[in-house]
Amino acid sequence: MITQLISNPSPIFEPMTHYDYIIVGAGAAGLLLADALGRDAFFAGKSIMVLDKADKSQNDRTWCFWEKGPGPFDDLIHKTWDTIYVAGQQWEKSLEITPYTYKMLRGIDFYNHYVPKVKAYPNITWVKEEVQSVREKEHVVEVVTDAQTFTAEHVFSSLYDPSRPYSQKHYPVLQQHFLGWFVKTENPVFNEGEATFMDFSVAQNGNTRFLYVLPFSPTEALVEYTLFSEHLLELSEYEEAIKQYIQEKFKTAFTITETEFGTIPMTCYPFHKHNSDRVFHIGIAGGWAKPSTGFTFYSISQQIPKLVEHLKAGKSLSQFYHKDRFLFYDMLLLDILHKDNALGASIFVSLFKRRKAQLILKFLENETHLWEELQIVTAPKPMPFIRALLGRIF
Image (cartoon, rainbow, N blue to C red; front, side, top):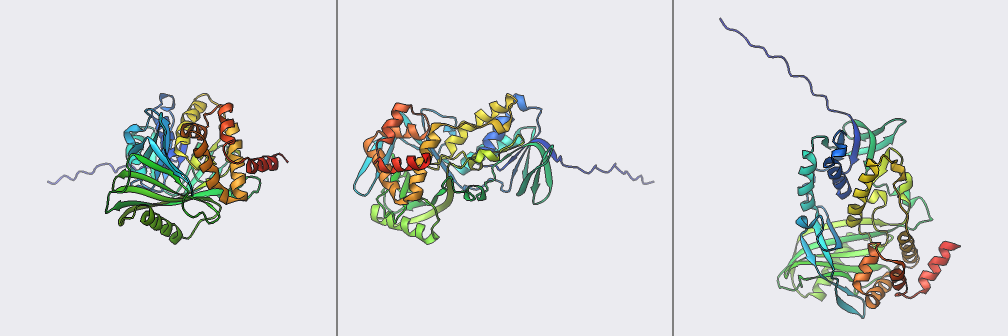
């Protein structure tokens, strides 16, 4: 006699489609926010989803920032420098930045640390799908991907919509755009203890153009051609500029081991006006990039804890905005560069030539006092700033 055992069929798993919070995009802002929510007991009862089209397994970007002393990301830092180099057409100088340290964080190291950590939180779901749209309804927010639709009480979106700042004229929009080559040279030519912060000795061609060099060893470095301007270049123009710089500056043969390309909006456009009580924009989409320099990572790391405390206090997301005088300084510089883009080199070189590097870095972190800011704004030639100020007033 043969007895056939028939087990009950397994129930069909229906993935959850409604969440308290959905985080769109797992870049720096998305991952830091997800981690902050995941490790805070206050949000243990909240269901959270992270949506991103990539698995974050590629070294797709590099973040750099400066800070005093030890910081929360030190275990992930790839390289640090205590000296920076700044140059113009007829001036150059190596500048000590102590007590600041200039730090470089590779995207892959950041992802390898935070992605597994975020996925391990029991109340966080990670979904690899490309988001098509975020639609706010009367009582929920719909997040439409290329495969399905989710809903949430609140959405934190890092989807940057360039049509918003470009559809107006009140706030100029420039771009920080760059091509970087990770190179290995035949000869030991790099000073690995010094980062080239801004080298304006290259041809400006009517723009604000500089080289940026981060050496990892005497034969390895990231060499990046960067512009603050309105329009992108043809790829060959970035490539030729880097090639020529290495040949003239370092006089050595080299191989390219890796490349990166990026563009960051430089504008004082009020991105926060697109936030609501249910949809909140983070990272570049939220206007968290420093308008006058494009530095973003440090700003994000400062904004995330404030946002989390805002949520814990039960305050409306639309109220999370703080305007300060530093935005006005940024606006004046962008007005100047939008009107005459070639002035960037002389402005930045005059700052580093006449003021201490530590004061400039403190100012660019929005941490100076009014007396210190007066020292900064009086370093360059005053007329472009006076004209920009009068333009804003009238």
